[in-house]
Amino acid sequence: GAGVSQSPSNKVTEKGKDVELRCDPISGHTALYWYRQSLGQGLEFLIYFQGNSAPDKSGLPSDRFSAERTGGSVSTLTIQRTQQEDSAVYLCASSLMPQSSYEQYFGPGTRLTVT
Amino acid sequence: AQTVTQSQPEMSVQEAETVTLSCTYDTSESDYYLFWYKQPPSRQMILVIRQEAYKQQNATENRFSVNFQKAAKSFSLKISDSQLGDAAMYFCAYRSVGGGADGLTFGKGTHLIIQP
Image (cartoon, rainbow over all chains, first blue to last red; front, side, top):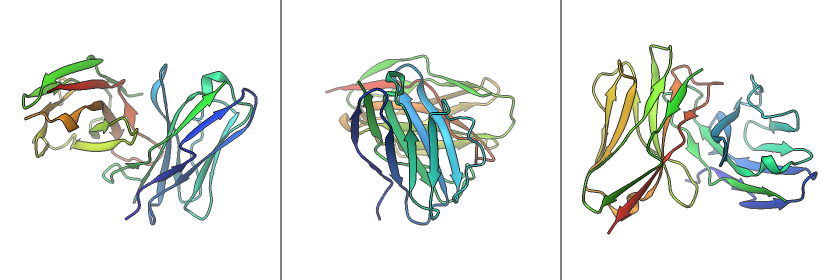
């Protein structure tokens, strides 16, 4: 079956612009996760959705970052007024259930470059 | 907060040989999960192997096995009969047993090079 997909694969944007990154999880997976992979910080966990709700948004790097999930499926990560330090690969993962015993399946990521 | 440390930024091994990647972690929890993920140039993270902390037996998946030392908080990955397709970044990761809002905590990664 289809895996986790993310779009766009690559995005180049100018500093100060807003960007939207999309994640399509595996059908039927209730849990969805966003991670950021950057040279300076390594892999960081950003946010988790159970269904459409995100119980803890404290992992988002700043208030310029927001995320939503609609219909218990597709999720978008929005970065407003992008800065050069936002340049990174943004990875999305999904799992059937949120417990750690369930494997997280990762998408190929979106490489964001802020010029 | 938990931390994961991979002290080997890069490792090189001859094809068909065995290589061991190191990982240590810090936690105050008694039950948790540990993982090794592989990330090839395609960027997609692939689960290699996982270990539940309450299980004393080391996990094994074909050519991949772990040496889990709970008291020492050590979790190394052994790759036997290395193949060219094993070349990738390898990340050690930790997750609390409850999961949910506790995402994976990753180490900085080890770049594994396979020499033909």
